[in-house]
Length: 301
Ligand code: CP
Ligand code: NVA
Image 1 (cartoon, helix red, strand yellow):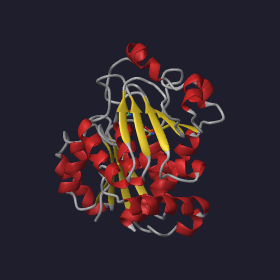
Image 2 (cartoon, helix red, strand yellow):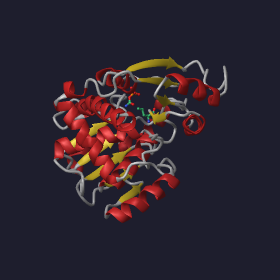
Image 3 (tube, protein in one colour):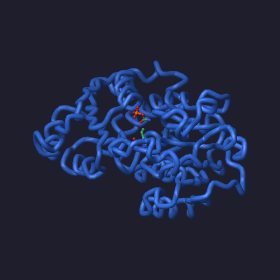
Image 4 (tube, protein in one colour):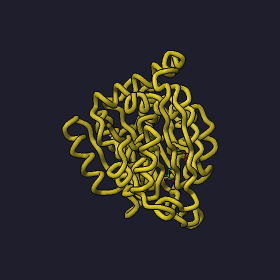
């Protein structure tokens, strides 16, 4: 039994195999329509979702499996009955638990107490399946991953952490530009950096936005993540220097622009860039489906 809790579980070869399988599934989905026939997955979300929920449910369907959605946005998980008892019940009926949770600890507890695969569909610390789809998208557009320079702008968050982990494993140079004190999780960064050092790529965190080299990819995410009640307007001045706009794209040398979505248009990214020729944001969104199909086949097949 295998889990995807953080993204650290996968080797470089496994990331590449997953991306290749996702590309094959994208090209020829009907060849895989029975590969999880009769299996089921439970999609249990404590937070809202458009892309992740829809694509996991459709991915299960396209592989011959069935997805059951449990809406936990009312705060049921761990309250109506313990997290461990959720895991023990669900493990009797279903083949995997796909969880979007406020706390990473919840996923770890589900994995420790249940007896089926647990897949992280976003937590406070990680968004591993997002990063997998993102690097698949980079490979499609740039033809390679090793040696690619990716710059992330904005709040260092779950998405940033996962871009660091998967990037370090795949040989991508990842730089995060964030205001002082708003960078990524330092422990996760150091853990990812140790992998990057072995793979000959570079991870960096910088405060001032300056371009001492050109970047192939520029990437951003919301300045305020789900679960944080800070009004977006109140951090606008702090984050505005990190906004992906036409000027920043021009200076960075970027070939493609990425955003995991949902976007707060004209906050972290301008309309011109998001709707412009370098934007691949909807390719990323599409690839969530293909990567989830590959992930489910890999973990449950
Ligand atoms: N990118 C992403 O995870 O989108 P959702 O929150 O809509 O699932
Ligand atoms: N960092 C964002 C990602 C949304 C897909 C959040 O956690 O809300």
